Length: 377
Image 1 (cartoon, rainbow, N blue to C red):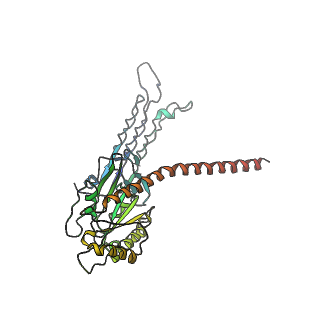
Image 2 (image 1 turned 180 degrees about the horizontal axis):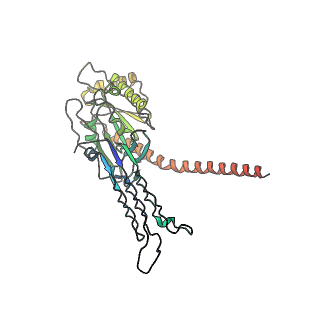
Image 3 (image 1 turned 30 degrees about the horizontal axis):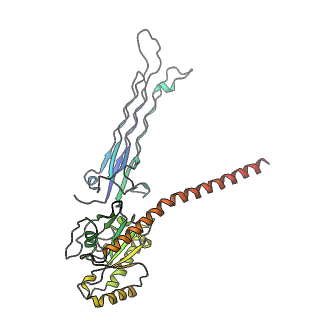
């Protein structure tokens, strides 16, 4: 199935039905009075997160979704039937914005979460609502409201705990194959990864994390070189970035330090262009020096120390060989500990924020009360 992570669609909610003008006409009941019913509500359009869907490919074939209009009211106090709503099922992690203004409409980060993107119009009122003691035969009614119409921009940000960064052929796909059951394509040419791959790493029966492998970046990606920045959005929700560097490139002209700096610079350019709420360049990032099995053991420690020194790196460093699995096991346990700690902190933050918010509300209430007392005096 083709992987689609960004689409634009048009949605039109249904109009409300018109109210009816009608009068009761039955034998032996003279002057029965108004009995025109209300119009039905137009159908609304919702987006719903569904964990069984992995891509937005369905929306590439159908670009316009229109809900039905509500039925008009009828005589004998008959109200018009309301139209059914339309549910657009999208993958978990989909962000929905209004295309013209960029206003965020929904961030569907949990299965079953839903959001209204186009509200159906309310039905009009029939003349039975306009009856008064002085107007016993009203001929007034109201038309149904028009439904909302929008052009939506939907983009998928995959839900993963850990994201992999690196140049093409740095060994990202080999690494995710080594630590998980994912089987992305691996070959000896650049850009073998053309769409994000997810792998679940299970450390214990109740401890696991998800790794996202995105296509490799190259210098100039911000200007559209290679596959550009289009897949960096999938790292937005990650808790940790693993920067994989090929420590033993096949060509002597390739400088691993220069390539590593180029990746960091591309992250900064992406943040400057997209202005994300959680900048990628500021996320926790670990350095993984890959393909150490291709370096002689007598030179390995010196090569690693030299790279760290020239790169100016002060964060965590792990020397691994993704193809042989050397160094991967302790790395996986370290990642799991970091993810567990981050998850625990995230669960505590809302409680603290709520307490602070409550405290602020109390302060505002006290100030307002004091102000009222001063005015009364």
